[in-house]
Image (tube, rainbow, N blue to C red; front, side, top):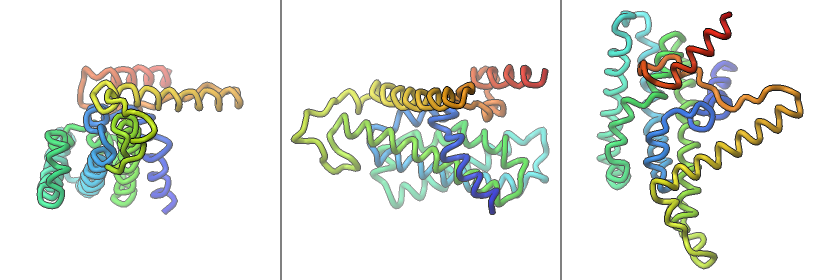
Length: 236
């Protein structure tokens, strides 16, 4: 059980996919114009990530190594289709708001990265908690960005008016550029805290981790190339 708790802590805090590993940036920047959109996208991704980790871990000794990536994508796509149907039936407004990004969960590098780096090499229970932890970490990231953007850009939080009488909303924060601004300030704050903490301990600050990028199937991915270079340096 300690291993399962460690996987939860790892995904939510230590290796948060949004704020630490900087993965899944496409939905992070595209759908977080409101808090409910961020929460909905995060929970949908969490469900797919948890179920796909479970299935891939259960089949890890059956799937041939040469076709593991196509097999992983097929499994992930099956669960994305299921989640898509559920959202169409029970939350049609949220489904319409998220649009094509629900289907694009299939190619989210967080999900395929965890399948390759963890679920395909570990037992079922830790893999489930790994998917749950990473998914919740992704949900926290998207929801936080959505709250800040909605608060600054519309004066509301989860649709409830907060600042109508205090100041005029800054509409740019609900537009696409606002996502870059909010993410940049959050990462800058995290990095500043990490640097300050490292200086007190007289250590090198760890500003981000790109371990999962090493398992990325995109051969031209800059994160993968950097991860491979760091791996070569560590092996020397």
